[in-house]
Length: 109
Image 1: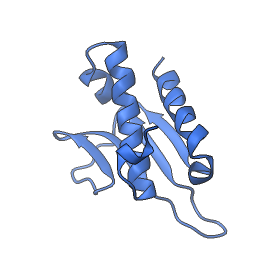
Image 2 (image 1 turned 90 degrees about the vertical axis):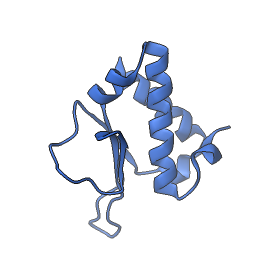
Image 3 (image 1 turned 120 degrees about the vertical axis):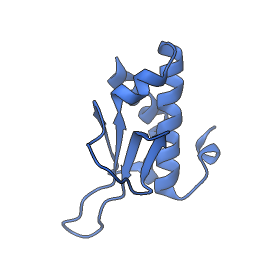
Image 4 (image 1 turned 180 degrees about the vertical axis):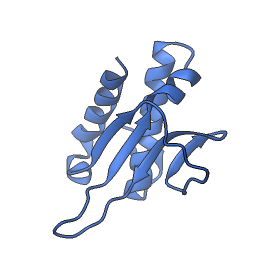
């Protein structure tokens, strides 16, 4: 169910930004890694990370950009399924906007 919400949101964005999102990986992990300090690439709510953008490394043997959503913290913040769908979409928008260097509202139709 959670993965379907992520896929739906990513597919909506890929329909409009196929070239910009080509090669970007999206992943779901249950919880964030146990780190004491997070970089600016982490979207937090309070002190709990909701998602992380790993910008990747260009080059022939580079690593593609990767956006990781943390399922449990997102589910914990949602009041119901519709709220979770909205939250997942907003978090993905925020991370994609950070990756592309634009404002999240620029990605909405």
